Image (cartoon, rainbow, N blue to C red; front, side):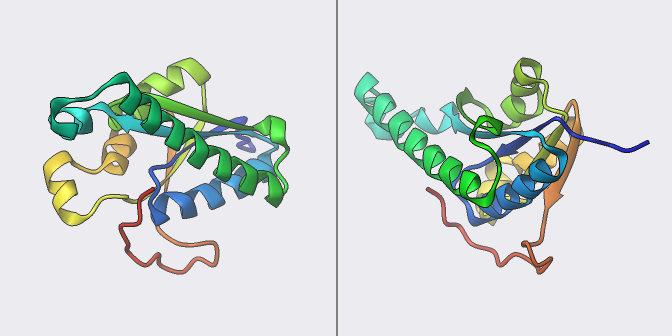
Length: 163
C-alpha cells in the first residue's frame, strides 16, 4: 500500500525550526500533490497580563495583521518553489497551540499529516509551557513528522528567532 497524503498541516511560529519544517512540508506536499495548510496559532495565554492588562481591539488587530503579513510572505515563498497557489492555504487561529494543532484544526480541515519543527521554544519556555511538538506527537489525531534536520539532512542549529 502506498501512503499518499492529501492535506498537510505545517504549523509555524516564526522560529527557524518551524520554517525549516515548512520547507520540508512543502517538498512532501509537492511529491503528493497535496494541499499545504500553513497555520500560526496566536497563543491567547500570552495576552494575559501582557500589555499592562490593556489588550484592546486595536492591539489584537495589529497582532493579527502582522501575523497575516508573515504568513502571506511564507505563502509567496512556497509558491515560488513550485507548489500551485490553490494548494497553499494560510490560517490564523487563537488559542492554545497544543490543542489547536493536535485536535481543533484537524477536525475542521481533515489534514492527514502534520509536519512541525522539533521546538520553537528555548529551554526555559519548554519548562514553563511544555513543548508543542511533544504534545502534538503524543496526542494528534493523525500522522506527525517532527523535523530535526534541514533540507540537506544536517542537524538544525538551535536559535530563538521568532517573528
